[in-house]
Image (cartoon, rainbow, N blue to C red):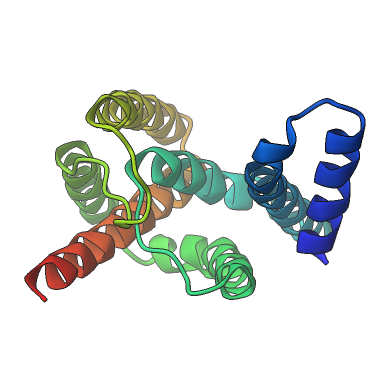
Length: 195
């Protein structure tokens, strides 16, 4: 469905002369990514709106998506599996993380968050070998990732000051899962380079 829509849009763009024919495949790929992201955001926002969990959902989703976009990380075998796992992850975090966090001492949450953020700051962007990022692009992504992590820390401090842990716990989980997927990709790349 998404692929067919991307093909139709790319072909129409070629016919109108908006893109060159040799860039058509790249255009299809880019359109598939954009359509997938828009569909994902629409489904997540619809779910969050229906269940009244907009703050919890966005508190997780924004840090997770933005950090992962700059840091990289492991990828599912197909777009459908990625879409399904991503939706399930957002639903799980939004539904259960605040309840679980309510039972933990705030000091433990803050220390765990500090460990996740520090690890995120130390990890350099990691991508699958098929993604051919230059060292300059990786350096720029590393800087952007570090700036985003600092902004997240600021949002978490504000969340703690106003005694609303939803932003703190959601963003903690977003950073934690982004770091976790990067560690998985680091492990995969090491195994592939050894074989």
